[in-house]
Amino acid sequence: MKKVYRLLICTMLASVALNAQNAEWTSLFNGKDLKGWKQLGGEAKYDVYKKEITGTTVSGTPNSFLVTEKEYGDFILELEVKLPDSATNSGIQFRSHYDAAGNNGKGKVFGYQYELDGSSRAWTGGIYDEGRRGWLYPLDLNSAAKKAYKQGAFNKVRIEATGNTIKTWINNVPASFLIDDADASGFIALQVHGIGKTTEAGKKIQWRNIRIQTDNIQSTPFPADVFAAGTTNNTLLEEEKKNGWKLLFDGQTSGGWRGAKLQDFPEKGWKIEKGAITVLSSKGQEAANGGDIVTTDLYSAFDLSFDFKLSTGGNSGVKYFVTLSEATSGSAIGLEYQVLDDKNHPDAKQGINGNRTLASLYDLITARKNERFVHPPGEWNTGRIVVYPNNHVEHYLNGVKVVAYERGSQAYRNLVAKSKYQKWPNFGEAKEGRILLQDHGDEVSYRNIKIRALK
Image (cartoon, rainbow, N blue to C red; front, side):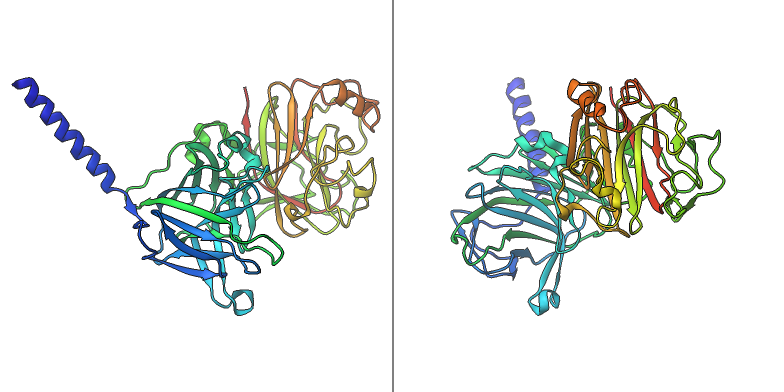
């Protein structure tokens, strides 16, 4: 009898705990109708069938949104969604807003969007800024998550928004990690992407089991190897620090840097102001003013991220594996992530097949980039260089991978043999080296410089 009693008590306690857990969730969809939602934007059709919200594409209409009547700040959102095919694109808006005067009075929805992408690009779970800044977290930044999406099936979506930190999952796989403070609250919306008049209409997107938590929200830790993209200046989350990230520039001082040919930081030619470190113009004279600056520490395998802003016609570079052992009259030698205004600087037309353009491995490998991911002079771009312990190297521009190569491979050495670097034995193959910001005689600013050692 005592065993039965204890079993009954345990069952009751488990039931109470389960009910308490379930009580934390609030359903955003009652399974019967669209109560609590309203439509904005285009004229796609939304209806309810078999406890699912169905959005149907309509030719010749812009993006359509089924919007919650309530707004939400910090939350955890979960739902399931199915796209009809690999050609259909959709999204889930959150912390979003509506400008009734936008689009010439037709109205515009803008704000964060969880990407739903059934194409071979496989960016489902990435974060897009609808109607405003464009891509904030292309899923090139976390290629492991590209395999999580299931074509032709319901996929589980999870979004966590806590303060300025946004995290996404697709089918329980961590996808995006964004630090951004543009919006603290806003509505949630289900998007049916606009299609042209010649595109096949009648395709259906299905959503179900839409629920949200809004109380006592805590950010779930992500794996250390998931990159955190950030738009906040010169700061790190505690989670980033725990994962091994550190700032190479604190936004206020030159600590950790010195002149490439000096023991201290240059007394002229560079300035630190408004959270940025800027090389000043000397009218295009390479290393003629303050000269290059390098880190005081050496790095081997690493993940390096940095923001940069070009002046019109600007030229600079971020170099790595800089040993300072080569005798040069101008800039120090090293593997270089090219920082260049391609449209207004003549160097973009030099070299071979564009291998001196923005984000390229300078004079060796051309960056394959789409112009929509290039921000013009006067605006900030984000560069990223990843050197893995096996010497595989990648360059990114604004979250998109544009260069990949194997340092020290025969293919790499063949490229060096045809380049300006051929006269330096074992160029770019040092075990470790410094990070360098180049003085090429043009004004270029840097900020948010952070690095994580890889093992």
